[in-house]
Image 1 (spheres, helix red, strand yellow):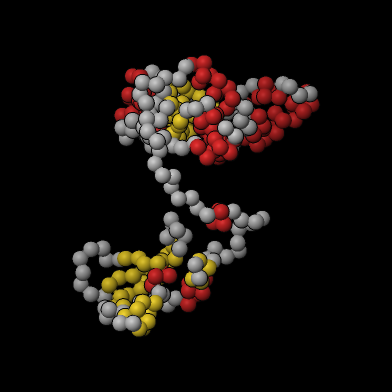
Image 2: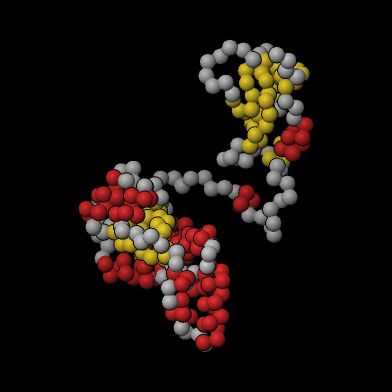
Length: 292
């Protein structure tokens, strides 16, 4: 398969064939290929814990919401990173270059990482993220399936694998043979939603399906609104819905009703036009300020 074919065929598998085993030599071949993944300063700060002991995996499953792939996959690999790799004999990362370049790289690493815990942690997750994708693609190219996992109690699993204090566990990856075909792939976001030219748009509230967020936000007025069915509502203000990034109206009903006192409705829907008896009318009409 081509690289693109491997990417397209890779899926996150939840159910694995329990009786299928991957040989140690194959696992070594996989990880050896993954170790060619790039890292900043050639620091190679990833660490791989091969978890194949059935008893250990049974214990981990207890702290992983009882997810079956922990025990059923051929192997589970813990992707960890050494947060202090930058100062553990760093000369060895550059032994293949001249001494002056080696000294420059080592001193640059020290100045970049020393005293900066956030950089150390960020680099760990970047390195392991790249390695994780490499591992899943290598596995798929060899005919195996995989599942990246973070649905577990990290502190408890870290204890079970005896994670050193200066390391971090970023995720687990289960690898084996799928017990069934994966379901339909979830809907992908459109290309235009995730790809921008040179920079993000200056406005975050862009037109969406003909609805001008910016204009609607600028013109929105909090207060009392009458619904087209006759009841009254108090629009308190606007908020942003985290999942869709759309503005929503936060409002309360001005009549007795069980349930939560506050509700939300997208601003687009709030400003929409409905048809009543063949006549178009606004869903909500502004009445005025609320005077209790």
